[in-house]
Image (cartoon, rainbow, N blue to C red; front, top):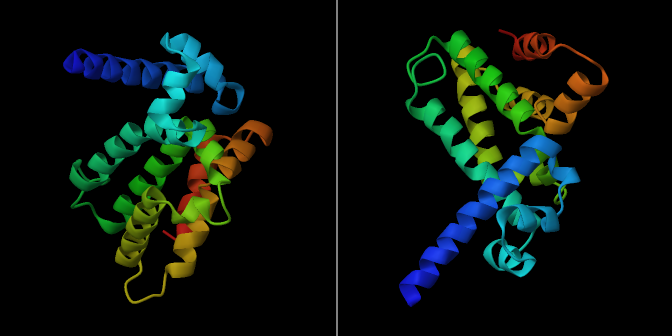
Length: 186
């Protein structure tokens, strides 16, 4: 009996994550209610809250495999994004990947960006992306103090900034990409 319950719980978790990802990607995280997700997953709202606790935890759970996939590309993928690339090409590939990731996941990221005064910068994923950005900037600009530039570039990659520039200002994503490369000074 207990094994069957664990299988049901795993199936419910997978159904909830799949439904949430589908709805968030299609309609935007801000438009999707927990009731919508529970209904699409075929579970009760109580099951959803027992499994994830709150909306933030559910959004983080949906984002986690996407973050992990990008992390794998950065740490083990082919150059220039992965290890071994020429420094300028590696920096550009990294900025481009972050931009693409943010654009693709903007509604999920936006839902998390304002959960506290430093939420965008202090979460473990952002700490990793900032550290990697600093490492790549330092490879392009050896001996320079790039801490400020690292944070300026990372701030320029906020989902609300990218969404505003592309959606409201109708700025072509390639123009944003070129601007990031210019800001990096490479």
